[in-house]
Structure formats: structure tokens, C-alpha cells
Length: 258
Length: 362
Image 1: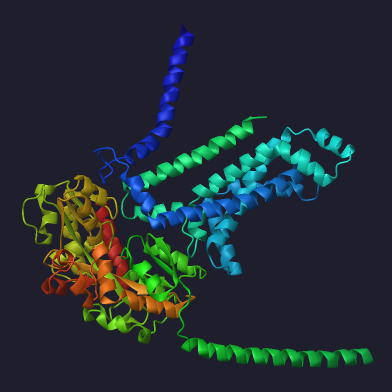
Image 2 (image 1 turned 120 degrees about the vertical axis):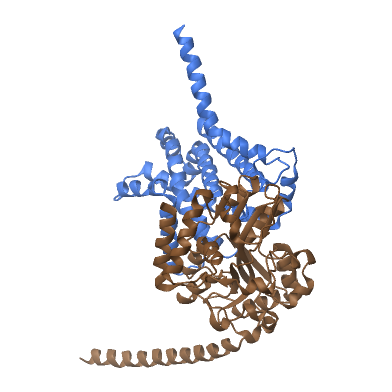
């Protein structure tokens, strides 16, 4: 009897927490189909805002920039991050502990500190701000995320498999190519997807390091809000949200499978 | 010893060569430096940094087509954001649109380039009223772009009386339905203008009177806000809002019941300007662009889209009559005469600050 009461209580509790977390997002999505321009009242269903969205050249340009930044920063950070993780798990070298601590810094420190640090660095080396500067900034914090994800995957990795491969005559490169990489691939892809998601969502760092012709999607949305939150912004947020969630779920799935 | 001698003579020889090279280099820089000043070649790109939706729908495209170059067009959402980006010195923009007070700050910080007016013959199209303003005397660094006012947004479905002056903000009938701008300078404009004083007064007794008026009004005010009042006015929570013309016209576009009124006692005017940052990579092309947007038809195209007021006298012929005849966008000469730009009040800034704090805290 009391078990059942507890169960009901837990269900209500969980329901309240979920609605607290997701209700605002659901409202945002629902109102992206609202006919009325003013957000507060529901007047009817429409796809209009999605249509205007796909006709807005500036907005599409921003989407293109975000994809470009995401793509390149993901590739670079995945390569560097995976190699870092392999090195950290595999070898002992002087300064390893320091590297271990420093590697997690971009995850721990607030975005704004990272952003200002990147910006002052660019000012120092006199690099003109643009897509390139955003990509570099994104790579620098994404390495940490990729390295952490790949490391968890490596934790359950049986080193004997590598030894066996080498014993059977495989060169170190061949071992990496045919044994190690295929085994940790789910971790690498999960890391890459996570990196892309973070890059796609980033506002703060892009805000500080963007320059000519490099308005990313979050920056564009922010500048649109100056003219009030229209359902167009809801529509674009909905699309972004679904896109990010899909990537995130794929990443999680990959990490769970053996 | 001998080897040292050789070394020294070698060193001298080396030094002479270096000296020669650096001299040639200097000469080269001097020559190219001179020719650069005279350079009047269009670049293939132009980097424009503007507020969102603050240009004509086809202005950029038309410019690209006419001059066969590519425009990189980015947006910012506040003067402060623009300022921060420009201050880094590595932003790379050629054309920016700061507001009046920001132009002053940017000039003081040496962030703006001298505009070569010879490259902008259309400068003469600008109404004399908007030239030689206090924030940039002689218009060395800035060209007027668009202007507006602060005034009163009224919801006419709730308020039937004809509003012509500031008194409505003190009308007790509308208690809890009034919003005011939350800014020590803009916030005092209604009181100062109602009393017939300058919005830039540094006279402490005048400011004291304004303070008393504002304190008396406080019980009627729903909110002091410079941004969220837009939504209150839109949704009908607020009926009377003292705010920026641009904001209120935006509400009016969505809510037919809202109108914008400039009180006949006058108000303050603000103006956004076109400027060129000091380290702009394509300065000449930027000047060509500025000249282009001052063409009467292009300028009118911009104002027809944004519904802000244009300082371009020649453009008026092409501006939609419903915009041109709206006294909220183009006030009569008589009213405009009583409008003022907000100016730096120097030491009195502290006085304004204190008075505003006292009003808010009482």
C-alpha cells in the first residue's frame, strides 16, 4: 500500500519537474505556429513564419555560417581531441598531470572568460576577426569535450587487443587504423556530435570573436530580438532545438552501445 | 685579432646593406603611402555593420549590382555592442551607424576616420538642420543617416481625449497605465519640456522643479522601462508610454490602436549617423557607399522601409505620402523648432544622476 503511495508521489514529482523544464520550450514551439504577431495571444494555426524564415536571405546566410563553423571546428577538434585522449591514456610523460588539469579548463571556466581571453589573444596577435577566429575559438574549447568523451570510451578498452595485433605483425599505424580506431569509433563520433552541438549553440564566444561576414545563427537571432520577439524567432528556435536534440540523442545512443 | 677585424668589417658591410635596404623600403612606403592617399579605386568588398532591419529591402543588393562588388553585411543590437567590437581594433568594418552620443564617444576615443567629403557630393542633399550638430561640429567624422524623437505612445481604444501635450502623463485618470523611460537623461525630458526648460539645462533650480514634477507623477507610473514597455503597450497593459518613436511605430505596426504623438511643447531628437572606423580596410569604397545611400531615391527607399525620419531633403519627393504627412515622423517646423538634441552636460551629469536616483527611490 505505502509502496503504491510512494509511486504515485514520485510520478507527480517527476511530472512537475519535467514540466518545469520543458513547458517553456513547448510554449515556444506552439507559438511558432501562431497567426498573431504579438506573442501573447493564440489566434490560429499557420506555417507562415516558417515560410518567411526560408525566404530571409540574411538568416539563411547566418545558418550557412553556423554550419561552416560547426563543420570545421568539429573536424579539427575531433582529430586533436582523439589524439590527446589516446596519448593521455596510453603514455606517461612529464607534465601529464598539468595537461590533465588544463585540459578540463575550457569545460569549467565560464564562457565569458573564455571569450574575453580569446578576444584579447586575437587583439594581441592582431588577427582580423571573422569566420576563422570563431573556428579557432571553437576548436580550442571543443578539444576538451572530445577528449573527455573519447577517454571514457578508452577506459573500457582492452589493451591486450593491440598487443595481439602487433604480435601478429601489424605496424603501430596499422594497429591504430584497424584495431584501435574501429573500437573507439562510437566514442569519437559521439565526441564529434557533441562538439558540433556546442559549436552550433554557442552565442557568447561567437559574440566576442565574430567579425566581418561571420554572423552565426545565435548572433543573428539576438540582433533580431531588438525588434521584439516575433513568431519567426520562435520558428527558428524550434528548428534549432530539434536539430540539436537529434544530434545529441544520436551521440548518447552511440555512447551507450558497446 | 685578425679574425675579429674581418668580422667587424663584415659586420659593417652587412649593416650598410641593411641600411640600404631599409632606406629603399622607407622610400617605397613613402611613395606608396602618398599614392594611397590619392587612391580612388573601388575595392571588391565592403564590410558594413548596421542595426537589424535598418536599411532598405534592396539597398545592399542594388549597390552590389551597380558597383560590381560584394557587401558583407552584419548586424549589431546596441551602440555599446558596436563600440566594444570597434575598440578591439581588429573588427575590420568599413561602414558603421552609431547614434549621436556614441559618435561623440568614438571621436574622443579616436575610433573614427576623417571622412573625405569630396567623395560624397550627395552630402549637399542633407537638410541644413541636421548638419554641424554638437556631437560632431563640422561633420568631420559623421554623416546624418536617420533620425527620430521621443514622445508619447497612446492606445486610442482606451483614451478618447485628443493628446497634444505632456500633461497626459500627469493625468490621474490613467493611474497605473503609464510607463516612462528608465534613463536619467531621457527620463527627465517630459518634465523639463513641460516646464519650458532646455533638456540640457545645468541650472539646479530648474532641475529641482523637474524633480518635484516627476516625484508627483510617480504614483501614477506603472513601470520605468526602456525596453519592456514595448510589450506592455502592445498587449494593452499600458495605455500611455513615453518612449522612442521607432519603438512605438513598431508597436503601431502590430496594434492598430496605438498612435505616436510628439507633444507641442517639444521633445528631444536623436540621430543615427554613418561613420567610417579609423582602420577601415576599404575607406574610399565606404565613401562611395555613403554617397550612394544619400542618393534621393535610395535614401527614400530606406526610409520607406524603416519608417524613420530621413534628414535627406531631396529624398522627400520619393517618400510615401502617409509617412511624410505623419506629424509623428515629420513634425511641423514649429514643433521641431522646440526639439533639442541631448548634449553632454559635463559636470552636471552627477546632478542628473542624483536627481534621477532620488525620484526612483522616493
